Length: 163
Image 1 (tube, one colour):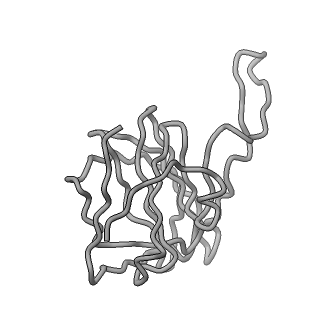
Image 2 (tube, rainbow, N blue to C red):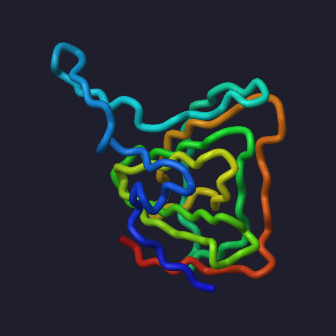
């Protein structure tokens, strides 16, 4: 099966989590009017079973194309935010059930859009177009098993055109 990404939007991504972007955020002027703050962009959900927030930076590199989709993962104890640190498009792949190819959805995110995968949302590890793409990641650290992986019996391909 081949997938083609569609542009990332709040309505299309809602079953899987939240799109993190300034649009729709609570806006306020700070620093004597020299800066603008956008609040409440995502709901961080990490406290289950004594978890706490982990803020990190991840550097990713592109995979060979077409992208072979062999694995999906999810985090049952917390949400996971990925927000790009450069203004370059990147890819998001999610599904409702990794054993049901029809439940897969692929999105192209702008370099000004992040995602907050909801707890238990099946997603593919980070997918980028450009080498050394950096992301701010906010997720859960702490006790408990917060990682599930499913290796797909039938590999899928994600067909893309570089932006």
